[in-house]
Length: 107
Image (cartoon, rainbow, N blue to C red; front, side, top):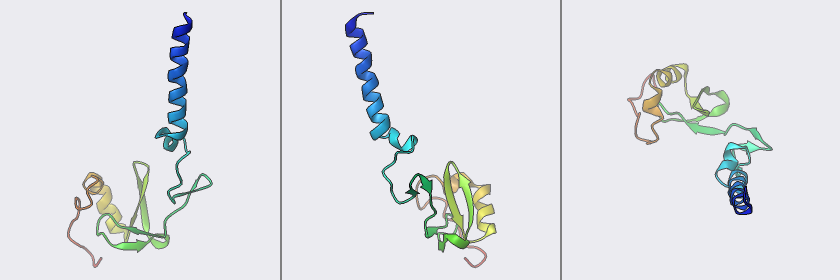
């Protein structure tokens, strides 16, 4: 193997290392920028959240919760959580207006 090829591959390896350690890969490896959801590497719940089904702002300490695609969702009731589980894609499509359904059971 020629020295030029070795230097070429070492350059790419160094770039990939820097990107994984300090760039976008840092979040994958757990070296994120601490956006309030991590404390010394441990996940902590937020105090309040918006329920994806009825769009109510609720306290998370007494809320029902569900985990989907690595994200925790909070609900005002077990009925909201069940409705979310039955049609998860309609509530997690990324658009805040998508998935809004009529309010139910007094939410």
